[in-house]
Length: 543
Image 1 (cartoon, rainbow, N blue to C red):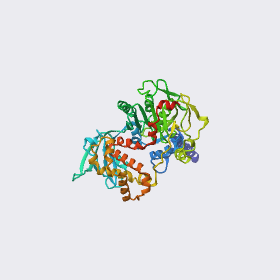
Image 2: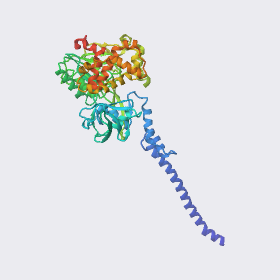
Image 3: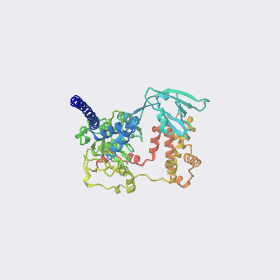
Image 4: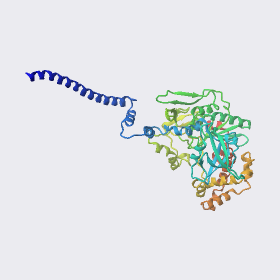
């Protein structure tokens, strides 16, 4: 009876405890399951894409700590590597340099310098810039930038440049050595906005022909171009040569503005079209000031993108003659899209088509290596020497406004082909100019020793008169021999004209910048000579 009473008392208690314990165990299991589900849902719904899920899993669940930003930076180039060759990712740290040519300025102190024998020497002061205001002189040796010693060290030019550049309004301290001054001089310079020139040359070749060389198409290029045109017109220009050789392109709307200056109203300049971009036509507005000016455009294998738009629009509208060699073949349009961390993706969003309806984009389906090796393959195929070596696809035949046949599918083919000039080339010329750079170093050394005598020279003609009293080629050969390039009298004789021209042109650059370089360098340029002598340019293009 006692046991029955005890069972009556204890059993309900055990049952209650069992229920409570079961409830707790179930609650614990459920909470663990829910934690797993919640974690899984966190990864699966965080951003929606598989890539985001994987990055979240690594970031939150990987056994060791990792730098997820670094993983992203390394992954992005692999993600886009199989797209077209011109879609590129630009890390935030590289954005300033990447945009300088487009924006047209950068924050700096306003000096051109050359690192010669581990010594950083100021070649030219940018007129009106911070260094001129701080009384830094041409020829000054920079030994320190802030606390960083740059003299006597094997520091590359890019790293020295990074020390001098920075945000506008910030301060940099230069320690310099100046000839005739016993002690180092310390200059505190406030960085300013330094312009990046997009026009490399603008001058009269003769009494009637003007030449403008465009290095890139940036935000300031149109205004520079118009100023140059107006100046040349005041100097008597009756026909114009626009040199786009080695111009890799730039801002599309700027190229359109420049083309507009030469076309009558409602002429098609180009149209763009892509999967997500409907066709958009760009036509001339008829307000261009130079619609009747005879025009020639120079191109070569490295003229790309906006350069090809310029040349193609002029050619397809029968507005002028295109002279040189087949252009690069880039017919894709990129948009630069900024990302939250300051980086950017230059994404190809459309193709462009020049007025005849042709795309000049060359194929890229065999990979980027094959794409960029195309120029080398052209050399092997003989295209640099003979126009007849170029094969055309009859399926890509188009007609200009005037009915002339042109071809698409791989660059703009010039109306007048000019082969690569190999006359006067020799192994010695290659050794002193490309392999050892001793020719350029000689010109810097010459300028540095004669700087005082040349300080009042104002243009390239004065400079040539001054240089005529020197035997520059033999001087360079003696200098080269002291620096490891053995004299070769036969090759020097073969290349004498090129050596003399290059030496004078480089000295011209040291003394007068591009205004002293190109007018001398182009004196022996066969493509420029062809353009000068082509006759009435507009009629030539329509025949």
